[in-house]
Length: 218
Image 1 (cartoon, rainbow, N blue to C red):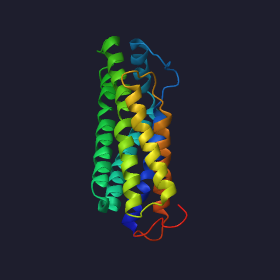
Image 2 (cartoon, helix red, strand yellow):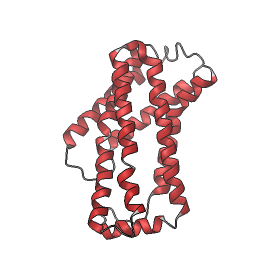
Image 3 (tube, rainbow, N blue to C red):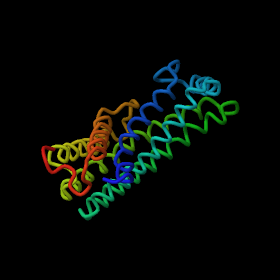
Image 4 (tube, one colour):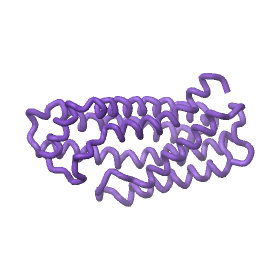
C-alpha cells in the first residue's frame, strides 16, 4: 500500500466522518420535524447569522468530495470483476450526482429567503428530502455490487463481502418498497450501508498489501 492507495482507501472513512459532522453542525435544532413554509424560511434566516451551521454545510460538501474519491478507488481495486465492478461504479456515480443535486433545492431558498413565498420554500425543501430517499437505491447498488466484485477479486473476504451484498440488497429493496411513501429523513438501511463503507475503508486503509488485503479471517 503506497501513499496514494491509502488516500483512496481512507476516503471512505473521510466521507463517513465529514458527512456526519457536517450534517450535525448544519442542523437547525429550532426547526420542527414537519415544518411549515414560514418556519423553513425563518430557519434560513437564522442560518444567515449562524457561522457554525454554514461551516457544517461546507464540511458536508467536503465529505461528498471524499465520496467521489472512494467510489473511484473501489472501482480501481475491483475492475477485474467485470460488469459487477462497472455496476458498482455506475451506482456510486449516480449516488454522487443525486447527493450534489440535492443541495440545489436546499440552498436556493436560503439565497432567496427574503423574496420567496412559504409554499415554494416548503416544496423545495421536500424535494431535498425526496432526493435523499432516492439516493438509497444507487447507494445500495454500489455497496452490493462493490462487495461482490471485491470478493471475486479477493480484495475482501467472505464476512465483509457477504455483509456488503446483503446490506446493499436491503437498501435496494427498501427503496422499492418505500416508493413515493416518504415520511422522514432517516433510513436505517442507509445507515448500515454507511457503516459498511466505514469498516471497509478502514480495513483497506490499514492493510499492508494492496494486492491481497483480506484473504484471512474476513
